[in-house]
Length: 301
Ligand SMILES: *[C@@H]1O[C@H](CO)[C@@H](O)[C@H](O)[C@H]1NC(C)=O
Ligand SMILES: *[C@@H]1O[C@H](CO)[C@@H](O)[C@H](O)[C@H]1NC(C)=O
Image (tube, rainbow, N blue to C red; front, top):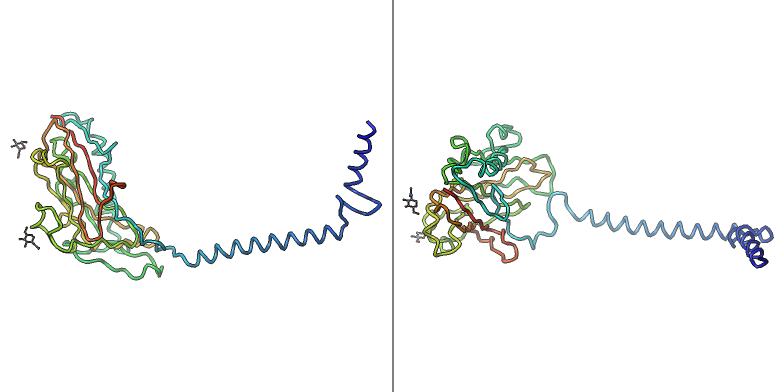
């Protein structure tokens, strides 16, 4: 008990020692010094912190990715999307493919001509593949850059204008394919047709990233049937590149290619691989969507 009393007394004295005029063991002058020290100390720390971040921010641009030397080639993606890239539907059952049709409908909305009629934002870039459209330096943020129009009518039978179900109802489905956007990326066309599959040798042309689909397994090649490619020259024309990024080109439209499988063998799980070809496009085992994709298609009769 007495120890407790002493302790209490010691505690009170510690908080305010009227004899030595000390608060929590320090005099006012001592407290002033120590507070001043910490204010300056943390002030300097904060200054260094803010300064470093500011210096870093000065070196990076709003428009152009700073480190792009390791950018992987673009992914190749398709609509409709599908769970595990498997498409299974029955030609006679509308419900079995309705989700696919809706998916394409939604995807193509920005590609309607009425969405591209603002001449401040869009311009025509020609109907045949051409070289890149340069729209000035990425660094200079003077206004929004125009984008090339891409009207869905280019996709012909897969545009949705005459065939509202994109061929699904007759077992000739369309896939709409695009290369994913990469700011400031300039895909390079194949240097010659020798790197292309034999089937597209003769349609080889410059200023185009061609696309080709084939059976995943050689022994099933005869089950794939003819494949049509609708787009500007059966591939991705270069005048749609480079992409200037979300800030400078918010209305940018990727060029599209529609792939129409004209006679896939029915009631058979067809494995198909589609690939694009270009000098700076390669493929990766790790990222299976880089420059290509695989799908399975099972059409029930
Ligand atoms: C493409 O290859 C074929 C042979 O397969 C050749 O006859 C043709 O001249 C080539 N075309 C071009 C543009 O290189
Ligand atoms: C579709 O392919 C089958 C064989 O798989 C063939 O018998 C049929 O004639 C083809 N149809 C057309 C329109 O080419």
